[in-house]
Image (cartoon, rainbow, N blue to C red; front, side):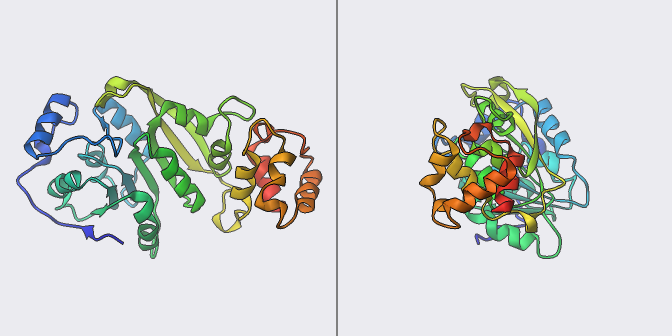
Length: 298
């Protein structure tokens, strides 16, 4: 995995950073020879009260290990690093990595992993869970990568508290009720494992550069019945196959899926019948708990 960065020194100090001022952040970027990247979907969280609300939702404890994805210039990082036993951050932008090294490198509990978090986090998870556990993951996630990273966590069955800022539409899709307009495979994947809540809606003025859409804080708490070792391996493929086309019935969607070949369409029908799930229904009418029971029976 990429080399962790630890204990670097520089004249740049935490006290000199004004995270709430777009003007001062722009000056800092200019002085460091940096610029915002559309490629990485970068927007700094400049609303202090919004950051504090996100941290409150994290419920930090001094004995915990937390991850932060996309720390940028450390606006959220500096709220966390003094409150936990270990903080690992994942940053892809080399310029921001340099600043993070300067600001937090002397903190003995701060570890920085460079590169794409989706590519580097699996190795980091193995490393950080050898003798203990990762208690939570947070981040002001880029709009263009939020769903992919969250799905990465879900598909790896990483059981921990997660608190993110994401596009409002994405948060609503994660938390929406069955048979609603935004209910999707992503909704089911989240809600089968987690209790999903939206503690706050954040306006564009709380970010720099200012996006054209609203954002939201979304929190995910592992369900009491989410036992990683007992989670059905067929769950993901069953849910994805069921939602291939929203207009089609479960039966028509599943006929063309891998589940139709193994363990066989008869097994899919029989297990659905035993649970009272009519395959003439559409996936949007099937609750996360129904999908979970169905996958367990399969």
